[in-house]
Length: 122
Image (tube, rainbow, N blue to C red; front, side):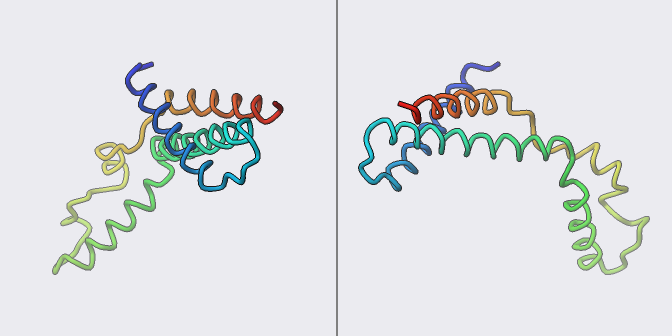
């Protein structure tokens, strides 16, 4: 794992979590504030990592290709499948890979969520 990306993910999760916990904090105590901050930071990182992974697996490729194809058909004057700049869907998917596997974000999210659970019981 890349240490820089790991530190960036941890910092981002801490900042977002602290901000969200400060927004909803109602004076329950330090343990509740820390638990909330870790939970919100972990959930945001987990959702981001899962979305990137879904993009990486090609879950949204069909929708993106279809929308681009529709826009292309409206913008080209003499539209025809042979004149298409996008090509076929398999060609498009091979050339336009999106997303990545966010190992660092998954790891930090897991650590934050486990620490949040521990802080919740304090």
